[in-house]
Every structure is written in C-alpha cells, then in structure tokens.
Length: 389
Ligand code: ATP
Ligand code: MG
Image (cartoon, helix red, strand yellow):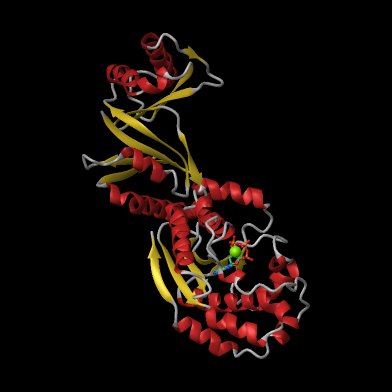
C-alpha cells in the first residue's frame, strides 16, 4: 500500500502576498529535516503538501515525528493513496484503517472531491463509504458531532487519499521567515524555552554561551550543547559561540563594588552579544528573563542591561510563571537536561546582597575602573564556534 504524508500549513494562510515566500521556506525546512531519512518528493496542491517517499527504507514513523516539530504546520497525517475508483476506495479504506477503527467506537466519514468527474458526489461518497465501514466493523457507530475518528477521503487528480485523524502540528511560522536572532543560552531551564518560543515565531537561531573555566566545567558546556540539540529539533541548525568570560568576571570581582557584580556581568554579556550578533547577521538577542524572577530581572535591572544594547532584546518569558516555563521545557524534552547540576558562570561570583534597583548612571559609575573595550576585544578574539544539529 502506497503511503504519503499530508501536511496542512498553519498561519501561512494569513500572509497574503508573502504567502509564496513562506511556503517555499516551509518546503525547504521540511526537506532539510527529512533529508537524513532517505529520498522523497514534495508536491503541493490546494493548501496541502504531499510528502511522498521514494526510497524503500524511508522511515515513515520517524518522518512523522520530525514533521511534528517543524514550525508553520497546523496539522499533518499519514495517508494511503489508491486508484480513484469507488471500488478501490471501498476496498482500501477498511484495510488501511483497520487497526485504528478496531480501537474506537465512533466514527464519521468526510469526503472532498477536487476531481469533479468522480462518479459519486461528496455526500454520497460519505454515506456509501460509511456503510462499507459499518459492515466491516460492526462494533462501530456513526457520530457526526464528536467522533473518535474521522475517516477522510480526498479524491484528487492523481488518486484518492484516505486517512484517519489528523495530528496537531507545531504551529507558528516557518523558521527563517522572521529573520535571525542570537539566544543567550545558560544551561538553566529558561533560556532553551525562550529559544524554542522565538524559533516558533519564525526566527532562525544562533546561540551565545559565556563560560568561565576553571570555575565552570567542561560538563557545563556539554550540557549547553545538549540543550541546544533539543531546541535544534525544532529550529534546525544552531551556530553556537562559546565566549571565554573568566577574565571579565575576575576583573569585575577585583575592580567593582560587590553589590553590582551581577548587573555589570550582565551588561558585559549584552555588550559582547551585540557585537557577535552584528558579525553573525542577527537582528536581535533572546534571553530567558522573566520579570521579577531573580534580582537581576527587576525592571530597573533589565533596563540597566538594555541600556548597553544596540539591538532589540526579545524576552518571550517575561510574563510567565516558572511553572508555565517548566511545562514547555518538559514538552520540548529539555527539562531533564536543564536540571543537571553543573555550575553556570552566573553562580560563580554571586554577591550576597545584589543590587536590584539601580538608578540611571549607577552601573556606569560602578564599572568605571574596567577597561571595557579591551575586555570585550579579548573575549571576542577567544570565541570558539561550533554547529549544533
Ligand atoms: P536560565 O534558566 O535561562 O539560566 P535564569 O532564571 O537562571 O535563566 P539568569 O541566570 O539571571 O536567569 O539569566 C538570565 C538570562 O541571561 C538567561 O535566561 C540567559 O538568556 C542569559 N544567561 C545567563 N547566564 C548565561 C551564560 N552563562 N551564557 C549565556 N547567557 C546567559
Ligand atoms: Mg541561569
């Protein structure tokens, strides 16, 4: 039995003239994601995309799993293709959907007839196929309002497509259609979730991680890479910059008032991230900050870090509770990695009483003994890059 995957695009429908740009981005994203699974063909007709395996060993289950994580898709399903004759449809449907139909009690049939030369009109096809299915599965009952399974038949130019329930797609916009931004990734729970949320709004991702060896370990870096792999399942490839941050933190400790350590450290992160974003064609930064969650995430603290930024900082978690963030973290399978214990550079020199409400000008004063420009240059020259898939 020949099987295909049918894909319905999501918010794309809203995009008017940009629609074709969005569609071709989505097709390319799907192609890139499925490429490791073997050869396949993608075609499109009437707001449905058809993914047709060509290689014998193309793994449909894995393909479906991957499609479920591609943004820009509202729903998808596997479907069987048969000849577009009444006999063939009546023979194929009970056989193809046998397992699914055995496990439910109620169903209905929906039919769509793109090919108007097909001898039965849609309501007739629904009725007659319904009767065939009731005969093959006498335990079933028709429920047109709330069926456990909807059997859909679409009669199209090159054949009839038969499928059961559609699966919910990842939603959002195709990655890349909103441009590119760099996420500041820490190894905690929040930043991977923030990255996922912005990829969902169509941003392609780069990532920046600040590491302070020997205070932070190689395991902390491995953890960050593992978290980015979870995000890349949705966003596609992520270019990661690991920035050496030890000297900056030591200098801050030596030359700045203790209650400003965290704020100054965050301002340095932002300055360096803006520079990296510029060279890597990123139009914005993404952080996992949530208002009031910790001392450095009060509004005055956020504004003191924003002050040194030359590009927008996106904070998709700003209005979310930890519990809501954790729910998404679990959903993208990042949580178990996020809670591994390795130290992050933020926890290395934490002040006992961090300043939470800096007034304008106070941070500048607190960091006046630092040679900011040369620290930034040195950190940037020590960056190591890698690609996460
Ligand atoms: P997370 O769970 O993402 O670590 P958090 O609640 O621990 O967040 P902070 O430690 O204050 O909060 O960090 C706030 C944000 O700053 C993080 O979400 C992340 O975007 C960024 N950040 C923190 N530490 C680093 C780091 N070592 N490298 C890159 N970005 C970082
Ligand atoms: Mg953190």
